[in-house]
Amino acid sequence: MTVAERTPARPRRVGVLALQGDVREHVAVLQRLGAVPVEVRSPSDVAGIEALVLPGGESTTMSMLLDSSGLSRELEEMVADGLPMLGTCAGMILLAREVVDGRPDQRSYGAIDLAVRRNGFGRQVASFETDLDVKGLDEPMHAVFIRAPLVERTGVGVEVLAEVDLPGEQGRRPVVCAEGGVIVSSFHPELAGDGRLHEQLLFNVEGD
Ligand code: GLN
Image (cartoon, rainbow, N blue to C red; front, side, top):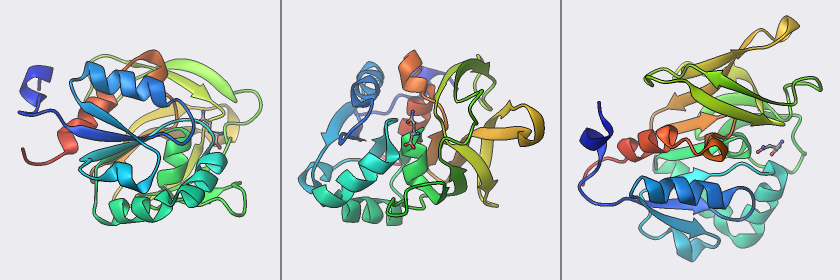
């Protein structure tokens, strides 16, 4: 399917969780795709959004700010309503069902049935860049990994869209996953200015 065929009849309002992290990069990608990004900092910002992006940054800080801003409940509701979401890196951690090596008070919202280990790539490969084949995309995606979450378990309903090979026993691990309208990546496509997962997110918004 071409981009033109996918372009919705009217611009989508897409929330970007803007408590911390690389909000600006996601906003820029969404603008380029013709969507209307809405920076979400408090519960009043979520009205009318049709999808939500959770950026990379620091999941423990975002978790804390979600609680103090009152957005935690909103996020729970959006997950329960099946709102399409894209989470990158720290955003992936927030959307996972289970977080290993997180802070004890850190919350995750179970939008996708994954267990992820915070900073799980190990010292040698904590941060790296690579080109990845992603299912459904014609060209490889340049992936920037920064102290990324490592997928430890995928639920039966989870589709693995891309994997990386890691040294030793860690083996091949999922780095892009989807379930229903939720897409997550362990890396930051937004830092490379790649909008193809965002495009898929817009495609996951139903109706016009
Ligand atoms: N290590 C960070 C965390 O635990 C995620 C890093 C990132 O988003 N680049 O939230």
